Length: 534
Image (tube, rainbow, N blue to C red; front, top):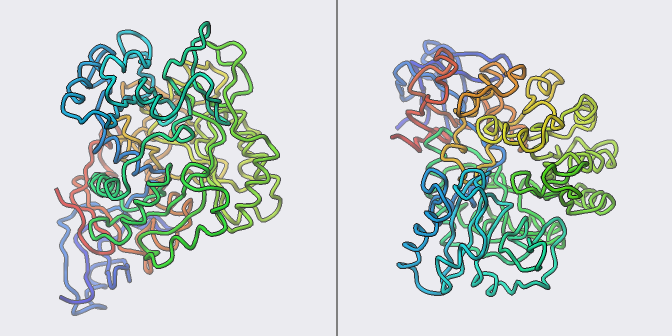
């Protein structure tokens, strides 16, 4: 086979600086070496192998800049599905889990995976508690997960983890207790890691993650900004770096303190010695500043409407965060700060601003900034500091209207992407998918939502903030690459970059906007090699 291949008879959306659309590109040694007219490339590379793409539209490989492959592996491969599509009530969930318990050895963990706002979807109009899970089994430790932030444990699990009425809340977390008796309800908020929640062995988790990765390839994703939430998630990523069945490129951000300790930061790079950086590299460190809004744990300036006197939890005080961010920045790492509530968002902005000149060099990010709370002043602060906001386009379809329903108009415009883009902010495409909805990892429904501004039920979501189609594609290509520090390697099809691309079954540029979500990859290629074909 010739070392050079020309892919031709295509509608190639390069996403280069000029947004050129060409009919062919040449590949050698895993990288694009030229793009343009087929006749010209054929003349330049006479001995090249020709690959006819049959007139298909081609995009650069798509990038998920905030992924949780570790969590998708648990949800898709290791957990029992109790989302609303599977069960309509807590009673039905109990019956489903009893079937699992009947074929599970006593003492082994059972994980049940639900979804956001499932308390509003269950017939009982509440989340399960430990007594509900005790009805499944007292011989198995069991936990139910509505989101990463909300986990409910049965009595056997609490006992195994050593949790009782005297167990203190971790900074930024909360163990729910009955308001009158003080009895544990089993519900915990941002306490899974502090309580020592169960993790699969790293080799088992690596196998599950490799299987989950194939689902990413099926939707055209070739690179991740992978946030390792727990220690074995990081171990599994390092194991996958040497495997032939893991063709995704991943830039990894271990979470402090769940996946690594603060003392590990200075030596973190050494864990990636010998790892092929084109496939797996260390990007930086992830911090949680507050909890999740869907779990009622995000840090707000004002009370939760249904919880007078309660404003959520901050993990750090301002001085602690400023010192920690300074130390991470000094090591040359990019920091990803989870900040969902407006109080946490302002804390994150203040910490970046305290770094002074040069803060933009390491491209620190605020995860979930840009979903809510985007006043003109905060947008100006984002621009001036150079920090990258990372909102979740898929949330337009799923949770955005739920935020407003819970907190009212004080959240401001929902997902104000138009305002961010007009301010010159490059929004990175990402999913934050942990399996709560079946297609949250799929960029195409999110691209459609950014254009149409419609929820999955067809409801309008602040349509004045619609993006154009090319702007939406740019989120998942150029912008996402820039947000993980890899814009010289991926994110567009041009000379010198990896030949990562996706061949579509229809022309995404001409399909009706309300059908973008149905566009499917016909092939996915990584480094000029075919890695997915239905």
